[in-house]
Length: 462
Image (cartoon, rainbow, N blue to C red; front, side, top):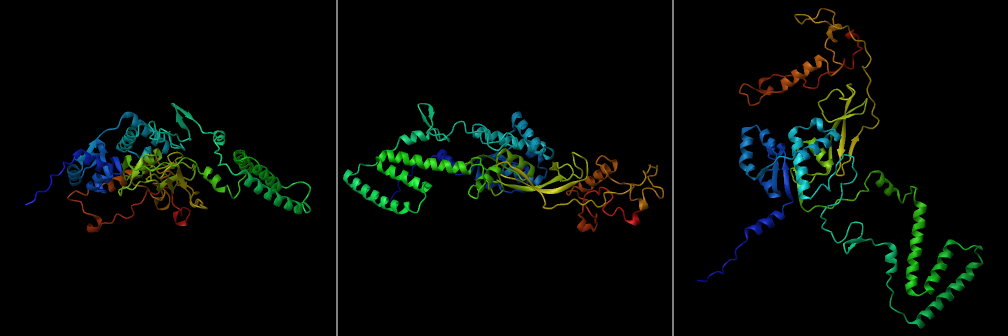
């Protein structure tokens, strides 16, 4: 009976390090949404990220007992609970105020972004790959400890602790001379070339004008270059090529031609910034389903991943834009403009790209419908003890009794509270039955009607 050779012991630490290097994400910050929806699953999170982070308030936001038990059993042992520092929270708060997302972000949302910002600075030794302001076209700077220490981005080579720039003059002096050629062969070849050129010149001189053309001048310069020694000829030919390129460039500068149209369009669209190198491993990333959080994170240039662990570099969503004062609000439940107070908010699409550019996409040839803007208001209606209205008050049929024209009216506040109370129903209540089972229909559940409507001047209302 043969014995197998003894197996070599496997280093557990080495295998764990090798497996962690294969993971695409080092530190992943989790929001409440992916934990509640279980998308991605706990096994997918552990296989794609080396470390998982979240804040204490995210765990407390999970109120469903079954979901809370699942998170505490499968994920909580592998999640590091950490609160961000005050400096990170202040930076994200100020940034969100500049982008206009602060009004729709809660305190836990800001802390999740701040934690991702803090981990990004720790893993990359600073905020060199982030942005400090929303309108910043380029990143903050270069890494403090760059891996390419031997050569900088500007083409300079460090020498004795100093950077030496490679200028065109220095490159021009380092012209390598070609190997020596037999003088007799070179002389005979030169005589044959000159003889051929002289015959062609005599034939063309009869039909040409007295002043030499641009092609003749270049040909004459080329003949002089060939008659010189190889080293001088190489240097001067490069000078001629450089002069011709500079002349053509100077002629085309300032003019938009079909050849440089793409260049000018790229400059106008702010796409002349240096492209970011692709990262093999994301040092810090955030996983959330909230659009406002995604917008702020993408404009800071934080790494943002989807539930499929694909990196998000472009966002498109909807905002409300005032047609009167052109202000933008991210709160889609608003009916009055927060700036001018008029009910002129329209729904517009917006997008955010990887460079932090926020753009509003407006409708082509849009015209505001002014129908129903001019009408006469009925007389004011006084209150009564029983809450009833006398006949003829508030217009025909009482259409103007509860007319809403501003956000701070008591009628609008009262209807908002009633609508919120109707929508807030505990589905875990034993006495609660959905409307599809009970047969109850609540009717239209849209927004509160503002104004008198489009048919305010119809005869049946007066």
